[in-house]
Image 1: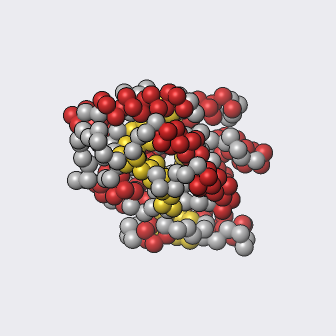
Image 2: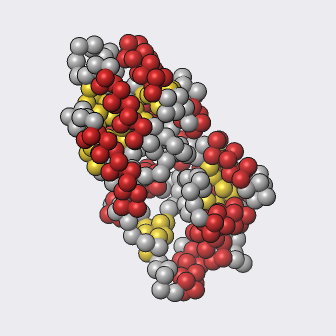
Image 3: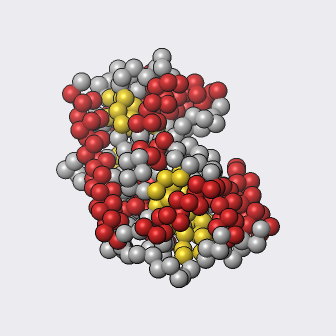
Length: 348
């Protein structure tokens, strides 16, 4: 989604973009609709031909920088660019907590080979510097992710929360590693026992590789009589429309590197309750922009939620939304890439 926002938002006076991809994905048509140039190069049939074709395309289009978003692609790009003046950089979007030994080797190679590595948060950079201390040598920068807030302009709302009504909670995120929806389901059971009237919508896809995450949440809610309070929506294309209905946005992270959904909720003026994972504390100014609860601590979660419900201020939410939109806009992301990554690479 970050790459799609970039291709949609970049001005041709800033950058000339070409997208080269090995495999098609569910967002293919959305990328094509941006009217940028996209080239499909097949890899599996003949890796050597792929490298030849990649080099040929880069030279024909007078590419100055290759920006990869997977370790394998920075390695392939570095090989294809051998003997040319083309610079390479990569953005690492995740952690390596559950990856295979081979994947970790590829990460280490990519850190060594890339001219610049971009991390999306300071905490993520610190983790990689500690894990791959022989490979991270100061040629890395931090560029936070960006969101195209134009598509949600006009949808923000800032209001107090009436005490005598059913509250609407929203959680966004696919059911995969990095998120902890099951803990939120346990929290929902506690809120029901406290007599809080709510409906809690979970937007996120059930992934086949980790189907147990989604299924476990559904089973827990069914077995504990939460089927009317907790609603599983599956994949949701228009998250900003769902957020318009939310009184609170609630999130539980196990190892996110940024938190796009959290930022988007804050930008719409919605009060946010999120756990104290270091990245979440980082993007919310240590809880200045959102309410923080101790990870997996049920008692603290309930305390913080009840406190938040009683202290929501429309004026403060407007201040937060304005600050978030200024800090995490896709325009700021593009400008940061240009000034801290691309221009230094071209001048080196």
